[in-house]
Length: 272
Image 1 (cartoon, rainbow, N blue to C red):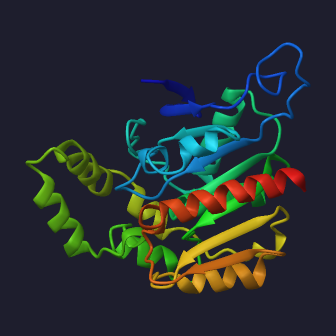
Image 2 (image 1 turned 90 degrees about the vertical axis):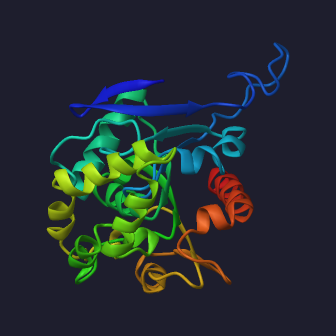
């Protein structure tokens, strides 16, 4: 189980590379040199999520076209869970440290789902030279009252759950196969600074400064559809797609559609 040290924490990571051998188009010595494969980093959602949501949906098909890097965000999955340090900026620092660990100094394509979209947008703002494009699925970002909303719902607005629903979920899964996940999620919510850190987030005012190509996709039944419209209005050249009948769980509900859009996006941005 791969773990790496970055920004003072132990991160669970996965790297997928499924394309032709480097330096050839098909692995044979007499073939022309292959075009350098793009680098993709996928960031998952909040609390009841980890890299597996990407791993079991679009990561493997994407690895046929790009080098794909996955990791459990701090406090999530099999990554270390510190008592504090869950601000968006700290998550961006983690991403920078992991890119440095992987030796990636070229711009990367960031795929952000839900809270992963928060981190992806912040990375593109703070380090535009390191981001080639953004592919955002149901992306959150801080607006007026966002911190209070996320904190008040135990930071699970990403799943449309309120505090009572979270407690019911934890109780329901406490004695099942998911007990480890349930207990870890409960510790995350109750014993770390996650809630306070989310509540302290300030509304952002820099969407118009995002300079890289951006694609955003949301479900028509999403509880954060307003964020989609704001991205389209404020991020220069942002392409927006609304999927009829889908909710905030778009990545799992429409994984085939997301795969098609993601592969097409990488092909287009590489040509561009």
